[in-house]
Length: 461
Image 1 (cartoon, one colour):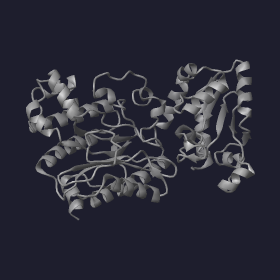
Image 2 (image 1 turned 45 degrees about the vertical axis):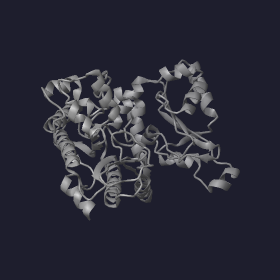
Image 3 (image 1 turned 135 degrees about the vertical axis):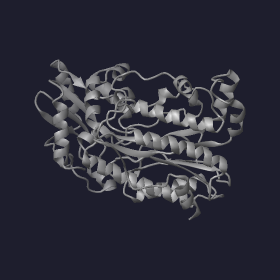
């Protein structure tokens, strides 16, 4: 945890955004895998961590704006539970670490909320992303599940987003620890890959590095020879000579700040000629996008710059043609780049995504409905303190190639005959994590291989 005053100051700032009412926060509970006592690894809610820092299950809190009080609700462990867990801090001891002096049993939360409702006071809550929270909110507030889904407080969402998007120095230090460990994961994978190894061997090794660093994974590992599948979590393939391997993984620190990197490298010691050509196009787009990151620049513009750079490279490979500005405007490049360039990062690898991309990445403005562009998670102008990812890629998806070719889509821009020969290529992407600074940006974490020469040096070593 950070110092107690960090959490106290955050809660004071948040409470000052409202004139009256209660702010209700639900911490996460344990989640069972296949029977009650066999649980998934516990992961606390990130907004709860931001304002309270307590990484224990079974807690809730109310910030009473009118009375300037914060109460944490929860129950101390029984002796029967301590037999299995060992001695644990009391709820009051945990609360004091977050600068909260008042606690109450979990059962009293319902009474507090009912009394507030009877007084006509507003109770604000965040959108639930877990089923048990939907049920709990419905029971506590006397709402239907539909009312819970539509009743989240937009004013609270916006206030929280506008606090969490600006990373403080202590947060940046945590993110950088996560990125440093993530670099170790990627360099290790680059060095160990070889024909005959399984995808699961690499996934296991990088997972072990994250755990050994004292934290865990910031998201499930993507370690695949089928990089054309954007979020491929299958690890059952065996690496073979000629394959291109894509690794997208990141570490999470003990305080749950995330790293998120992607590397693409050959299973052989060197890239093939075709792999080298495609990788260089992605690298050119990556470098162009990174160079464009600075305060005041809308991230949507940087995304489109990366798309235009990718299109130029694809034209050089004979896979696109015509007016490339118009091709990007119409979305023809999405044959090869179907997703967004990047996203916010912090305690969530896609930071605050549970609060809604339209608030986090678009400041409430509507997203595009165009294929490809609609998947861009971040569009707003960048500001100092933002932590973001930059992640261009090229993906040769056989089903998409066949469908668009049959439909005759974008024939003025896509060269389908040569594209057919890339149907078994896979995919390639490069991702780094950046902090927006007052005069530009800084790449977070220690250096990692990204040029063809640097990648091949690791592969040959």
